[in-house]
Amino acid sequence: MKPSTLLWTCAASSVLGASWIAPGAVWYDTDGNKIDAHGGGVVQRGDTFYWVGQAASNQTPMLYSSTDLINWKNLGKQASSITGMWRPKIAKPNGSYWLFGQQDRYVLSLKSSAFVGGYGQSAKVHIPPNDYSYSDTGMFYDEDADTYYLLTSADHNIVQVNKINSDGTLGSMVSDLRGGAYEAPGIVKADGVYYLIVSGKTGWRSNPNKAFWSTSINGPWQGGSDIAPQAQNTYGSQNTHELTVKGSQKTTHIYMGDAWDSKGGASSNYVWAPMNINSGSHSVQIDYHEMWKLDPKTGVVSYPTTKKRYEAEHAVLSGKTVVRDCSDCVSKRAVHGVSDTSDVTFQNVTGTGSRQWLSFHYRVNNPEAGEAHIFVNDEPAINISSLNSRAGYHTSTPIQLTLKRGDANTISFGATGSDGFEVAVDGIELFEDDDE
Image (tube, rainbow, N blue to C red; front, side, top):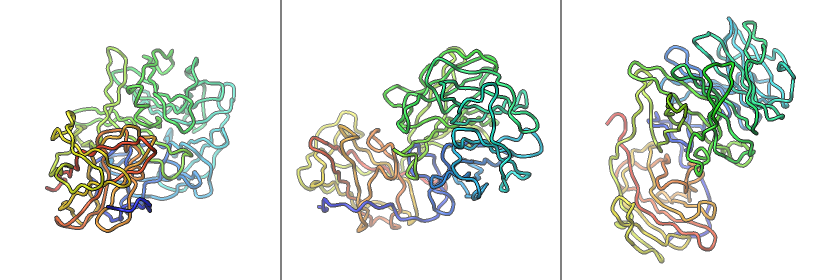
């Protein structure tokens, strides 16, 4: 049995090619550091994707590159002298490259002759036609019209779409969305229809994001349907960008959201997921999976295969834990009564010696009332929610851990919470690596 006074730590770090996208989990770059690109957008150039976002510490634009949307190389700060710039997005309306983002409730434009680095301030943008105080910049490129559009949300509860001129200045408003308190706009185009995705205004707290549609970028915008079940609050995230990948077999549209912490800080994570777009009903639905990946060449989405599973009822139990029936569990049995004085200890867990994906299958009666934690071998306790912001909200939580190579690993699962907080543990899954 482990002590109830816990020292929360992060899992040991090592550089390893990642193999899956896990919404809500902590994502690491190729140097082994947590990716720091919030409120951003992704641009594809040839076979490479570029992800620009704000650094949590000072909101300076950061850039990462990847060829698979999973393994991201940190290309560093793009405008070292610029701070306080939120939600940066890249456009290329001419031979120069432009970064647009929010600063002091206005839009700031930066310009560079190169795609990577060297961005300097061009202008504080005055947005036609009314120059309201704006925030939450989005970006949409309509390849059919070879035109970039800046998306903004105003304090006056107006989401606005403006054309970006060929000289990088902001042109006329082409459409707007009124009648609701919306922000965080993004647009995706499918089968000739434009879908404007927005979030409600609830601060750093997630809400049911909605999709409006139009057959023209000029509007009018219709609809307003939820893009996920209401109770999920867009799977704990807020919209930031929509990416379309046209593969040889399939075109896949990807929702990209931020799983903000309470202050929009460094512990915020990311929620990315494919989208199902129904052209008949003009609806957008996030196709949420706890782990997935996309083949950028084919556009096909795939999911992991279980390599090994460890059932909780076969583990070493302590305290007042008890094995009971569980109709929704894989083995139809689960260990109940896990608490700060009762553990479930899994032995002989197989490790690779490097960071690897595991999924912890457990249930809580109220994710706001307590937290699950694990002890890996003799290391200090790890708060699962510090490695995945979706922890406790799903029955399966994928996280990355570094285990010793071989079958000599021990993982103890416990919990802390207020009176009445209950945890039932089902088991642990390990997944096949790409090279196996």
